[in-house]
Every structure is written in structure tokens, then in C-alpha cells.
Length: 386
Ligand SMILES: *Cc1c(COP(=O)(O)O)cnc(C)c1O
Picture 1: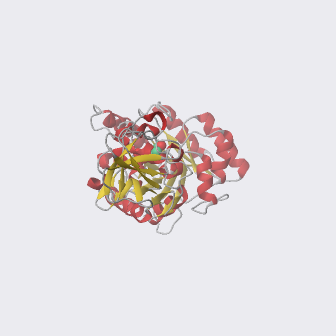
Picture 2: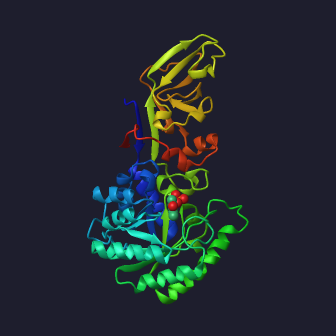
């Protein structure tokens, strides 16, 4: 029995990698482990993804990359990371996807990571830092084909930056890439296809001029949506964790949830009709009933917006979460008759007996996406191997 724990099934993560690799044919899988692997624990998940056949690891920030390298997952100062060419046993390529300050460039390059570049000014800065550090910096040139975030919107600029990267002896042109805004929205009025068409201009040029360069675009949703988006590598995050990129049932796509959030019933109390639970008295027992108190709250990342609007598994059954979620506790209605005793396991996300509550269900209640549900779990919840 433990107060609260996120159980991480690394076997499921490896199986999800295999599932994605089957979908991708021979195309390389890049495991995206940013934001502490969407709340699942970056170091352990990165290792499991490499075991599952990922040929690259990607994060958003330089500090995230340094954490992986310090933990010995891959890379390290003085290396340039693997090329991820897919040779069995070869070190994965490391890619820091995000915008970087000058200080962060040093950290990323020191970790042996490739970095994203889309302007000549930033390319020159990376080259100068690479020279100062005595490394060759691997560059992935980012083209904004419609996400409207990082990258250049101008094909000419993408080509210019790619060409000057290839010509710079402190740099290596490792990739050209883009990112989709609507891969998870089949009803996007053709936007996904228009992004693909626009990217095609850069892909054609790259294939002709630099055929060894890795071309990549797909996130998890795109992998399932269209093989046209696969190119040489796919950057998958959410599907690795067995979360459905389309907010549906992950099992229908052969994905198995990796995380479950477990706690226990710390107290069981008889509530007379009218007795209220929690701050603000937002729930009152309609009839005499039994209430269970579970030591999980918004201080663990269980969103307060789920007050009076969630279910919790105890003894293999769903029980309504009642009252206001506080920082450290939530309460559930066990019903007028119950056999549940203090110490019984309580599951907020995951399976218990025949029942399952998926992150997608909680996301729907919160009007958000499964990504945010697991990423929101706070450090107070230990992550442990399932
Ligand atoms: C987070 C991220 C991904 C992974 O997206 P999923 O939808 O989780 O597969 C891929 N590419 C970029 C640039 C990202 O920021």
C-alpha cells in the first residue's frame, strides 16, 4: 500500500514502439520524451523506447536532453550523438526540437544533441558555439508549412539555411522537417494535405541536393492517418504511452496504456443524509451512505475541475467522486451498502478487475486532451515500474 503512485508499464511502452514500427514499415521511429515523457518519467521511458527499437530520441528543451545524457541513456559531451541510421545496437540520434537561447545551445551541443534551426542568424550562432566547444553540430532545418509556430514560413529561407549549413564545417545538415497542426483532426478541410503538399517542395529539393539527409514530419496522429507523411522518420510521443492520438480507444489502434494512477482508501465513514464532503459543501449525501477518503488531490496533479465529475475504481467497480477535490484528498461515494474497508486500492487512471478508466475519459470530462492529463501529474506522485 502506498499513498499514491503512477505505475509505469515499460513492457507496454516497448510493445507500443513495436506497434508503431509495424505501422511505419522500415521508417525510423523517433521517441518523443519531452515534459518528463508526458509525465511518465523521461529516463526510464527513453531507455525502454530504445529497447523497443526507437532510432532517435527527441525532447523540447536543452535541460531535458542534458537529463537524459547525464542518466546515461545516450550521447554525452564530445560525442555528436548517434546518426540513428538504424544499425542494431547503435546509439540513438538525439534531437532537441525547441527554440533555444544561446546558453541552451551550449547545453544541447554539450549533450551531443542535434538542434533545430530556421534562420541564418541562429545558424551562425550555433556554428560559433560548436566551434568554441570543439564539436560538429548536427542541424535539423525547420520549415513551417502551416503550424504557425517555430520554423520559417518561407521555402527560400529553408533552402538557404540548409545549403549554408551543409557548407559550414562546424555544422552537419542532418535533417529537414515540419510539424502538422491538424493531423489528429480528420475533419480539417484538407489542411493536413495542404501542409504535406507545401512540405513536398522542400523534400524534393533535399532529395536532389542532399539525399542522405533525414526528412521527417509525422507525429503520432500522422503515422496512423497517412503513410504519405512518414518520409524517413516519425516523431511519436503520445502513442508511445498508449494514449490515443485521436482521443478515442487506444486498444482499437493496438496501443496499450503505459500509466496507471493508483492510491488507496485511507478512511471509510458513514455519512447520514445531508452530511457534506469537502470545501464549500459542494456535495451532500442524498441518503445515508458510506464515503471513502482517498489521499490524492490537485497537489498531485488531479485537477480540481473533476470535483463532482469523475469516477474512481475500488473493489473492481466505479464509484462517483463526490465533493470538492482538495490539495491532498478526494472523496468518493461508496453507496448505502459497502464491503470496502480502509486500505482498499483506489484507481483513478487504469485498470482494476474488469473495469478501466482511461486518460481519454478524464480528458473528455475536463474538455482537454489525454496529453494534458498525464503531463499534469506532479512530482509528489512517484513513478514506479508496474
Ligand atoms: C511533441 C511533438 C511531437 C510528438 O507529438 P505526438 O502527437 O505526441 O506524437 C512531434 N513533433 C514535435 C515538434 C513535437 O513538439
